[in-house]
Structures are given as C-alpha cells and as structure tokens.
Image (cartoon, rainbow, N blue to C red; front, side, top):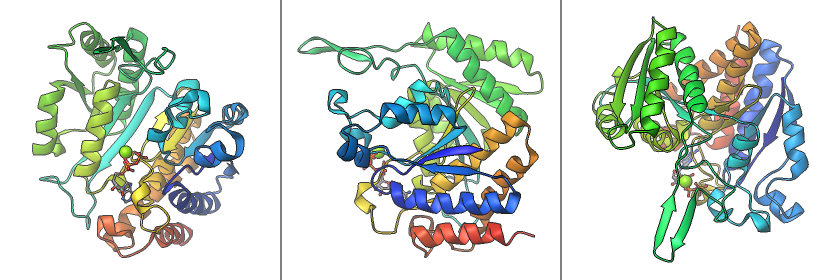
Length: 355
Ligand code: ATP
Ligand code: MG
C-alpha cells in the first residue's frame, strides 16, 4: 500500500509524526510493505509555493492508494485566488471521497461524558448537502442576493443518497446490524425525503440489518441519553458534521476522534478535529485521533483487497490504543501522563512487541 503523508498545520506535524511511527511499526510487524511518501500541504506549502495544495500533488495522490492528512487551519484558507485552497475539501471533492466514517466509542480507563459505555459509527455523506458547490462566485454554496439577504443552497441527489446508505449497511453487516438514518424530513421534505427513500430501498437488500429513522433534533437528545442503543448512524453532510463532533466529545475527548474519508478508489485518514493552534508545538496534542484514522485506512484497504494482514494490522492498532489509554500511556486530555511523541512511541512499541 502506497500512502502520501501530509502533516498539515498547528498540531499536525506532531500528531502526524506519531502516526507515521505507528504505521512503520505495524507494517514491519504484519509484513504490510507500506510505502510512505512525505509531501506538504497547508501553510508550509503556501509559503513555499504560493498555494496550500500544488496541482501536481493531486496527481501524486491519485497514483497512490491513500492519504494521511494532518489537520489544516482551514479557517484561514478563504481566498482561493491567493492560493488558500482548503486541502480537506479539495481532496474530498477531487477524489470523490463520499463517505466520511467517524467512529466514536468509550474506552475503559477514560472518563467520558456519556451516561453509559457506547460504540457507534457516524457515516456522514461527504460530497453534497449544504457544503456541495464550491464553484459559485462566493466560493461556497451561498450567495448574497441583496446586501441583507443570503441564500444557501443544499443539493441532495439520489445516487449520492444511495451510495452512502449502501456504505452504512455494508458497515453494519460487520457490526451489530443496526442502522439509524438521521434526517429532518418533516421540514426538508423533498431532500431528506429522498435520503430516507434511498435508505429504505437499500435496507431491503440487507434483511439482516434493522433500520430506524430518527429526526436530527431528537437524535441529539437520544444520543446523549442512551448512546449504547446506536450502532451505525447514517446521515447527510451537515448533520453528520455536527453529530460526529457531539459523539466524539461524548466518548471522552475530541482527541480520540478518528475518521476515514472513503471513495471507490481512494481513502484519506483524517482526525475529526482541527489544527488546535492553542496547543501546537507543546507536545500536548493527543495523536490517537490520527493513529485511529490510520487504522481505519488500513481496514478500508483490507476490505478493498480482501487482505487479512491489513485487517489484522488495523485491529492490532485499535487494541494497542485501548490498552495504552487503560494504562495511562496517553495525553492529559484522556487522563494520561505522556506527551504526543511518547504516546505514539508507546503504541509503536506495543505493536512491535506483539507475539
Ligand atoms: P481549526 O481552526 O483548525 O479547526 P480550532 O481552534 O477550531 O482549529 P480544534 O482543533 O477544532 O481547534 O480544537 C478545539 C479544541 O480542542 C481546542 O481547545 C484544542 O486544543 C482541543 N483539541 C483539538 N484536538 C486535540 C487533540 N488532538 N488533543 C488534545 N486537544 C485537542
Ligand atoms: Mg475547529
């Protein structure tokens, strides 16, 4: 597997270095033959090349199997004419990474905000909804029709609903076989109505999987009150964006929030949080978010190739993370006593020591 590694901004270089150490250890231990190619995007690229993402970088990424993307200070990248492309959006769109898979679970030994232990995955549609069209004059899916009136457009299409529903049901088959479709079809009758129709159609192909439907506002209450009842949660772009931050924080820390952005041919590991400039360069950031994202990336590859070794390597990383946090070998945000680099090194050491 050939991966491009882009460290990003803020805490990005620190958590990416820790993740690379873990990937090298797991590759060695499981004989994966991972090939990691380092490049740059974000601030460093902007100051060196005048753009956050060089066009030839896309070609290099296309030629690879996947990408490890460190967090980017996207808030600052607003002017595309000045090279300020949002790298995350750029890769999601250009590689058609339509499924944003964001697991959230509690860990023994980590204090969490949830009423009970839970283990769920938010499957968020990643290519349309309110965040769809970056080609409008305003640079987004919004336009100012008078100085005092803005119109925001939300695009929902049947094929995109169908493929995200399918990704959710396929995932549910490997888990507890329950999908919850989260929507607002009582108000957004046409768009979310279409989303629900497609979920129901796909559900008919998976008779073993139960489908529930919940309105987004009620979902926020339910997931706080009884998170353990959810397994796979599928939803449209913006609802998934918000809901997955809620579930990550419920699980203990945003620093545990991993994700993979998956398409048909490419996938991108990406922490669910931002570049955390407030703690950058202090060896305090939790690298587990990106380490868990990398594990998801290996699992995506395992699924695509039917490779046992990649699947085992992915589960070994997850187990090493769970053991490390239970032993206090993690950063302070999850109750541990180590810095970023040492946290990564301990996970890598656990993997190397596997029998
Ligand atoms: P950005 O503009 O890049 O999104 P931000 O200022 O919104 O940056 P986030 O990264 O979204 O910052 O983080 C929100 C809060 O969570 C910050 O206080 C940050 O320190 C904390 N945080 C984020 N990621 C981690 C992490 N991996 N480990 C520890 N704390 C984190
Ligand atoms: Mg942020």
